[in-house]
Length: 224
Length: 277
Image (cartoon, rainbow over all chains, first blue to last red; front, top):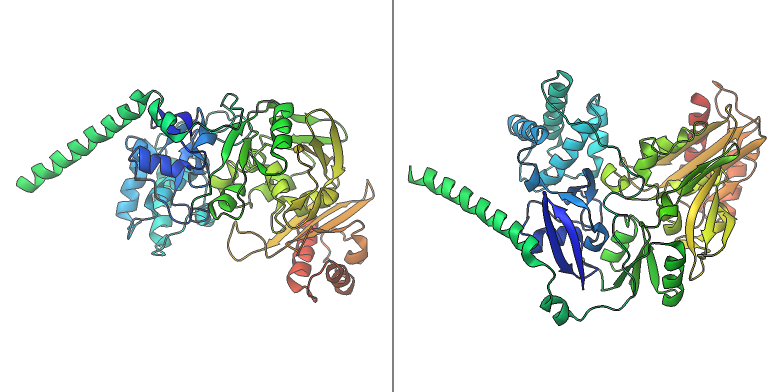
């Protein structure tokens, strides 16, 4: 077991994990961020796509220990993002989802297309979407929704923050200090000193508060 | 599926990585972006005792350029090349090949060195770099040796690395400005692994006419003098003529069932792509 420190949706987290735990399991099982979905677990289907250091990457074939010091943004962390807000609206208007299983990954990829390729035409949008599978085959609505937001961007109606300069190498990696010695910490000991739990529980508290708020809102609506 | 358990180490120097790899005596796997290794681990096709993260080693994202060529660190990602953060003026083919490797979310972590060491015959970098006569710079943490890439790869998913060695960088010779390169892969869906692929370098000024055919049963089929299968040197604008018999003979010797229609088509289209620009 190893302690891994990373930032998830702006909140610092330290979790003690087995090296084989992939990032998606850390997000879903430990932090309760189930907006990130899991299906093929071999990098093909795209439902687990999240932002690592601001760039889309697969969380099912990226192990948590490789993300020491990385900035992770999941679909939950993009609620107030202007591009994502426009995409949510467009997906609704263009019927860009049916069962919704692929939607979190689709939205993350769509946001990358709108941010990185403002000139993209339909062909390019479809090419860039080739790494996200929709099991309902509802691509027509998805492509239309993305093109609608691209048009908004080209018309100057959408603020997109400028791309930050990138360092060479895999996103999310490179930042960690040395981890040497192959000896593993016995499970019990690792849980015993479960490294600074404050950050993890802070995130859980934030999630709990949000769940509570949503529940209260829905309950209010129901009573009316 | 989930991987079987493994230990984890992060090396911060080449010497440290080499030591860990030597101690593990062949049971360790190096991880950079993990975009090929991740699926293999998740499917339990590989079950290493320890994973050695090499991305914190500064040398591995180092770029060095001189008149003869460019040395690209093994941990440079495919999207680094796609976006032109690493580029060679005479080789626009590198960015266009990069753009066709898997998907953006994979390219943001997948590295050029990882792709070569994984040595999937259906990968895009192997045939491309074979045609460009690239060399692999292999280190044991103290000394480096240079191996031509078509010798570095010994078979499907097999390379010549000894326990304690790792790929440090790839050296790509700089062709002349007049050189023409092309790559074509046959696949049913954008971003997929190739069913067949071809790459050519036609550089009259440097007297280099190389070709490589990928997605074979083993390492790429390298054609040191592409004029043998191209029926001479194609001229810009003119149709590319391929000697199918000669190509089939080469592919048959490499263990492919002939006529290897898809592979020959890939090579012809790579040559056509080179001459079209």
